[in-house]
Image 1 (cartoon, helix red, strand yellow):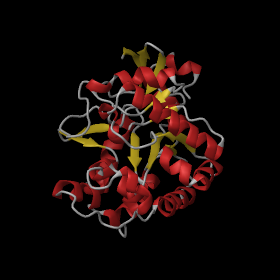
Image 2 (cartoon, rainbow, N blue to C red):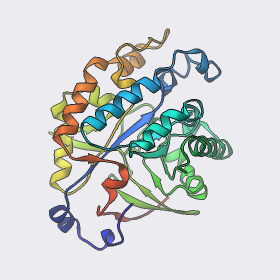
Image 3 (tube, one colour):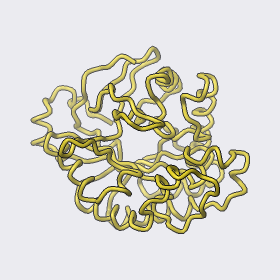
Image 4 (tube, helix red, strand yellow):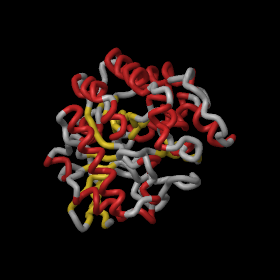
Length: 303
């Protein structure tokens, strides 16, 4: 959590007196649960697919342990309900647990009532698995956008205090809110305040470079590293994200997926794990909670 004095210290002082700790985050979902495949894989058929989420998440846990780093795991409620031992292993290893919703449904495709039911089910599933009540949330596919900002009120109403769903970029067909504040900031909702830690996008030679996920797999590691270094120079932590299936080149292929979806999902899977190890060894990473300690917070923004 942010310390009480963080709001009182200027960013320059924070940058000079405190080492930046970037947020290392994992969206815990299986390969067939991604938004790109939702028209090819029915949720009613999820149980019929070979599950690889336990093995892949355990590989990440081993990697993080080897690198002596901790992360925030945004766990899908569906996964927590079926693999509670996995969630317990995550918490037992000292990582932070957060919610990724239950059914991995895009927020803007839901009614407010459906969204409330989804996050409640996810919190209950995670709590039943490990005894931790999640208070941080990330929307599937960063789907809190202009037309779904109403979700922030519901998050606050249901006890969430932190969010990492609003991607301040443009040009993506599924998410992005270019007018959003890119710095960590407090959002004032009708139901209370939320601390927003946005996914990171940095400008490198005039080109916007999002940090994590498919962008990390597609681009050379040095590009992502340069984007993170740029933020270090101004005293801001980066928000990096990855999925367990992104280190699994042997995952079953989804039949009938479009060319764009296949490219986004399968590009450079075999190279991701060693790239991730080198990135973690090149920059200081930790949980979202650790990253927020003594971190400058931008002024309050109205939802």
